[in-house]
Image 1 (cartoon, rainbow, N blue to C red):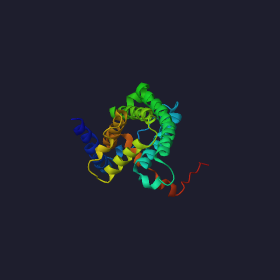
Image 2: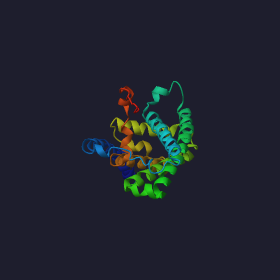
Image 3: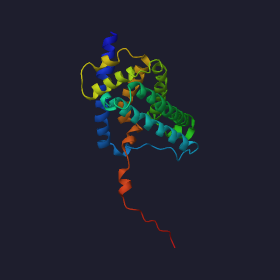
Image 4: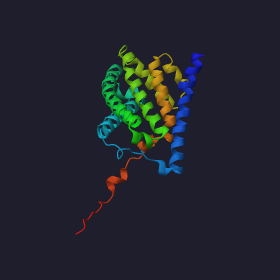
Length: 226
């Protein structure tokens, strides 16, 4: 039973989540571009907004690219420069700092959205849900440091890398790589995949709207009245 559940959650569910992420995002961009925005609430209340937003976004970006590079870079690429244990310690330090930044900023944003009357009145269920889920996910990420400290040889990181690379390259039986890891890791992975599922239906889509054209556009000429 546990083997079947492990295969379902970490061998099948990842592909379902990725499919919903890609197809759902494409469909929303095609059919609902007007809704493709972050729905900023800064105009409603500016107090602590900048600090909270900077802490959250910088922390999340570091964590995101850290996971992306750390999980999808084959071991052979960095083996000449560092051991898996060194890589794991670097991940703990950098990820820990970024995680603390993000959870402080995210907690401030969540508290602001759930308690401020003006912002609460303009927020949707999806707005409230996604910020709470992100804070929980950040907390789980920080909690993974505890079991990781028990084995700093990098063996667990190699398992996660093999699992992630197996998913991307469509290998079979990848769930077996992480069958025996701590439940905190599994909960963190499952919630991360669920965020993929929710991505197309929430404000998270604004992550894909990088204003690249801004850097190449002509300057706007603004003249004052005489």
